[in-house]
Image 1 (cartoon, rainbow, N blue to C red):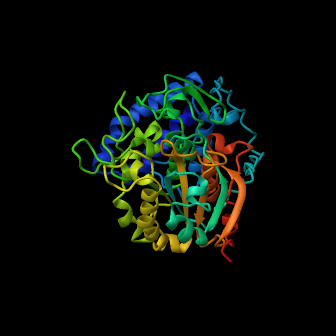
Image 2: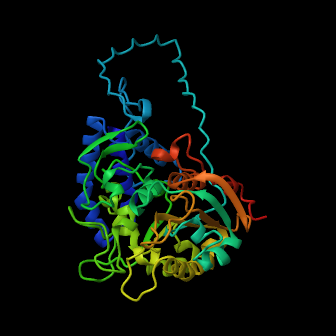
Image 3: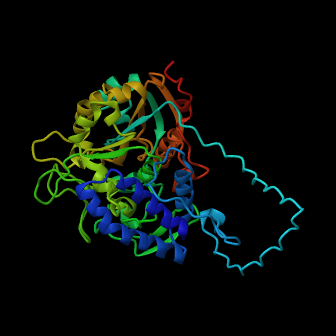
Length: 451
């Protein structure tokens, strides 16, 4: 339980160093709630306490982690004990000791024995990240593999301009048709459930939660409890920046807003054709990001991406770009008369991919992943695409991949999460750590794919 509380304290201290204004208020208002929830979870045995303990251990052990100034700790009294983590990172019960009898004084002629220095345990080597330091993910709706990346492509910018520059993941497939469960899997490693598969029509909190030792949740609802971690939490703990850039995200006043999500019982779709949909923005479904202000700070309107791309030191280590359902290519989501479907998704790519590819961060050490998070069903009366309906393919562009290459291994949204975690030397979350989950990061870690 103490390890869980330490995670919140560590995050609060790290955040406090840069907090001003709105986010500081959010931290003060919510940290007690968040910590209470974590303590309650630890006491009842629910949630991913093992993952939390492992992450806080890595964060606190890092020599580069800044800490708040504090007076030096007083020497421990004889016989005091420090509880150690049990299996899976759970703290062991704190033992109690009776006071020890004072040792008899030695004769004056006998010299006091020299104190022995405790042997240092060998340091466990930390995993090393590879040459990729900036990852960009653009999430779209797929019209079908052949209609996007295949011979019948309706997306000429993707298939004719970008495809020759990158590596094709020809057997990338989704978990289901909707954007939300695939997005949650790609940042949290959590499997679909009834609520996420339905697109979270009521922005439901988990009403009952049962977590596996690896932090995989089985329960009802779609807004994940505070102890359920995401890739964004991992990056924050490793002092790496992240941002989600959501197209069309605006507050109740119609002005651009940060971390906009439905209220309890509200739907996650766009309020109007062509508008923002929370279902495209999986970060707003995790209390680990909502409750300490991380979402409010880093989940921002798409317009900010252009400013952040201008300089490498302003570009986050991880950028998630979420278009509106209309711009993602979802059918029936655009205003009357607007371009929609595959043509709309291709136009979005043609607008934003060149800005990313020309940015200093990408040109130095970047990776752009063009992935699909949902399936765009064919128009009424049109034949269904041939082959696996969930096969969408994906495309990797980087100075470290071989142009025009193909990887035919099977991948899915858990693979997307696992691969990004591998690139940044992070421990896999949820089903990203499953034995069957493949990572496409190996050639990128070697850094010679483009040679």
